[in-house]
Image 1 (cartoon, rainbow, N blue to C red):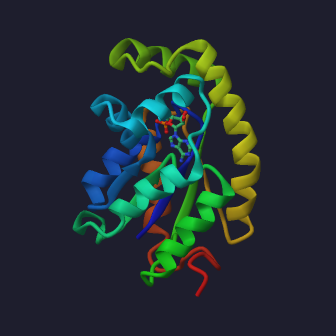
Image 2: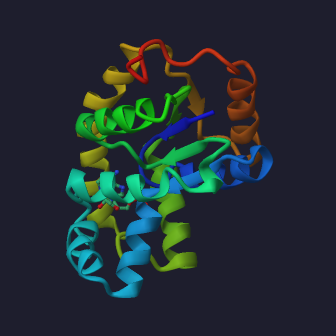
Length: 199
Ligand code: AMP
């Protein structure tokens, strides 16, 4: 099963993806984590991405699409993938659909984690204290939220046109959010989003 977790920064996508990864054997693919690994390793890609990330701007589509393409055939992805923070543009969504269709697969479910803005700020402040991410500051967050509002206005309708995009109330405590996600996953074994996969 291939799942997309869609939602604003600091909504809890990564936390939930890790829980679902453990429970269901799906592989979390987080483009944000991959980019942070590149930054930490000091690669050329990392150096270029860091500037954009610190400003809360998106890195180019071909960079993130390439990172996903490199991992999609790994044995860890065989049972399915939780796409976390990807796709963020319609071009990324289309590239993902093509990549999956070429492998006889599709996106089975897209979930929108919905979180109030004050909660996002609270969680980001907590994460900034715990993890020290350089883009977890109020200026970058404002830009990231603004970007989120822009790209979600394009990407969500893209998926809604293909099928239901259930909303998860991400304001609840971690376990409450997981329970909602599991309900959606369990109700959705075999019916893919209508035309994802382009078969
Ligand atoms: P995240 O950890 O998902 O919040 O991502 C952190 C930052 O990495 C974002 O603010 C973007 O600068 C960059 N990034 C992560 N995923 C993507 C993506 N799919 N497309 C473009 N930029 C991304």
